[in-house]
Length: 326
View 1 (tube, rainbow, N blue to C red):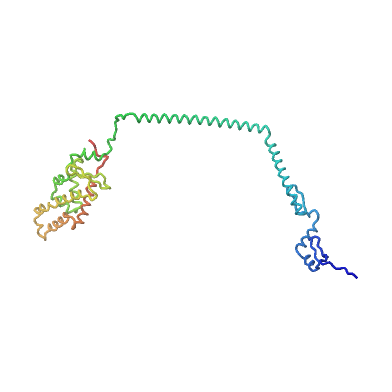
View 2: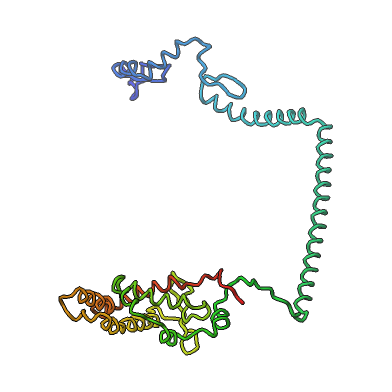
């Protein structure tokens, strides 16, 4: 007796239509029923029919249950919506811009163009005028440059101080420094004042008094800038600017100090008791000798002479606004 052979692949007897799952193994099917996918699908089947559709077209608001159907619809509906949107915008523009309004806009645009043309023409006309004026000015300047120079009168301010004119014209007859020192009178009283005041103040007084007794334009020395100690000294009938070390002025100070020291002999003759070391006049003699000779070294003497020069310059500095030019 022929027996019917069972197929090699027996047809599954356990099926889940909701999940489209099929199996011949009961255990596997039981596992499937416990999966999250199966439970979710079962819960969706229990939702009422009006809520089954989960895919809604945003353009036409149609509802689709399956994603594939929804996707096919969207491809067609999107093109349609673009056409509808363009058509709606066209209608809206036609509603906003009526034929009368368009006509008015065109008219206004023409008026604006005409105004711009007129303004541009006016601007070009003004520009042309300015160019013509500039051209005329250039021609005039060129003609003036070609004219021969005419003699002109230069008006100068008489109150303006001119050092060269002051020294070489108004002080051209000033005494030389050497002649001034030779004619300077120094007395025993000056020596005694030096003993009381000290070398710097004593010699400064002798020098300054000799200068102040003279007219400004006759003096052998002028200070034009006290801050920079700018000094001009008359020598050999010429004005010479002293160097920064003030060598000419220091030489003059030393000669004044020498003439003052020479008064020692006259003072001794007037006070013979000074030779007695126990007499008060001896102490005065020592003080006079110390102050008349200055410092005890070359460096100290140079320092003291610089102080004397500063004192003299402070007294004879030129007041440029007060110097009268005659």
